[in-house]
Length: 251
Ligand code: BTN
Image 1 (cartoon, helix red, strand yellow):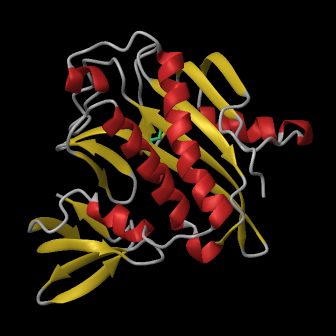
Image 2 (cartoon, helix red, strand yellow; image 1 turned 135 degrees about the vertical axis):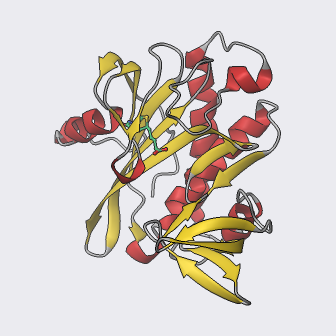
């Protein structure tokens, strides 16, 4: 346990790089750089990666694109807790900025209303049934006002608040503080009571009848929560069904 752990105690700042997740992975491959809480941030990410093989694009100098190195030592069966904690840290931070209607679109996209403001890519290494290390990549749209037309419904802090953020360094440090506080509670107490309830309450489209694509079939259902392994729970046809990421698509 590391009670003095502060995420972002050491920050590697790069003018440009293909992907901060990839850079961080190679960086910590060198034993002397394996420092829990280390952050890599870039002004211009040229080949950003998203979940499920997608890409993440970000206008140079406008947004936050960064990755955090963590050693959560969580049981594999509880790996979803890490993703939940990171999402909750982002929600805490955006609420603190004064944004309303901040939601988590399962499993870990951050929305403001019906628009995506941030994405999270967690890549774990497993040893002896535990998550030995995680690279948590976060893309947060900050000052970008125009997005590629192919992106479904993006937004940014500037679009939501009507204000440009002048100091991206300060913004990053506040966000790391919020994520760090959540992470420490996971790491030190290992007490996860209440985590699912808090996460579930913030789920996008929770309790709202909506359409979902399941195995190529359009169904109407209501999100009611997640199970301990992070599967989405959907109530439809008078019963509850659980889905993993590949099995269900939001419409
Ligand atoms: C998603 O919404 O699909 C996840 C997007 C994650 C993007 C971030 S930006 C920093 C880090 N480096 C990457 O290549 N991806 C993540």
